Structure formats: C-alpha cells, structure tokens
Figure (spheres, rainbow, N blue to C red):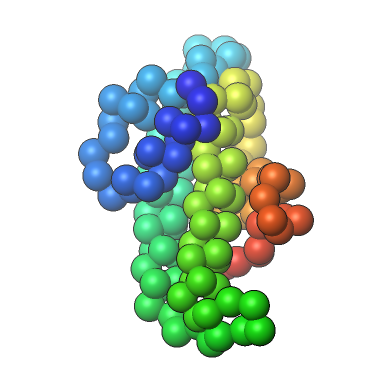
Length: 135
C-alpha cells in the first residue's frame, strides 16, 4: 500500500474506513499473545491518530493567520494544513512498516501527537521537518 492510500485515509478522516485500515496493516510478528495484544493497541492508536488529526485540522482552520511578506494569511493556513497532513501521512506509514508486535506494545501509552512527532521526521517538503505540536 502506497502513501497515496494513506493520504486518502488522512484526507477522509472521520469517516468509516475499516476495510481500508485492514488492508493497509502489516502482519504482526511475535508470539500469539503478543500479536493479539498488539493488534488491539494498533487499532486503538490508529483511531486516536485519526481523531487527533481531525482536531488539529479544525484548530488550524479556525485560527486567523496574519499575512507575511511572502504569503497571505490564507496561504499560511494552507501551508500549515499541508504540513500537518504530510506529517500524519508519514506517521500512518508505521501501520504498514512496523511489523514486530513489540513495537506497538512499547508505544501503547504514547499520545497520538508523540507518535506523529517521533515517526514523521524527516519528510521531503519545503520545510525541513514537521512542526512539533501538542494535542
């Protein structure tokens, strides 16, 4: 599954994407007990990341950005929104690539923004890295 598929999930967050989510998940490795536990954690983290992403998009949309020398306030808002989306898309790639059950067990107590901040860097864009933000 490519990042284009993740982008579709990100752009349509808040809708029922159960089948798409199931298709993109990597097969976990570990003991049967670890795998069962990690699958539960991974599903919960995915839903938390979707909710966090939706909340952040609303916050960005509601904020009034000031004009700069190079950009209007609306352009700044779009740049911030695109940067957030790119960061979240990168973080969603974990669901395809992190196959050890132990990874998901280790991050079970992390907040969605912590996963996004840690695993979305660096990414290619006009910015050198995703901005850090808190939930």
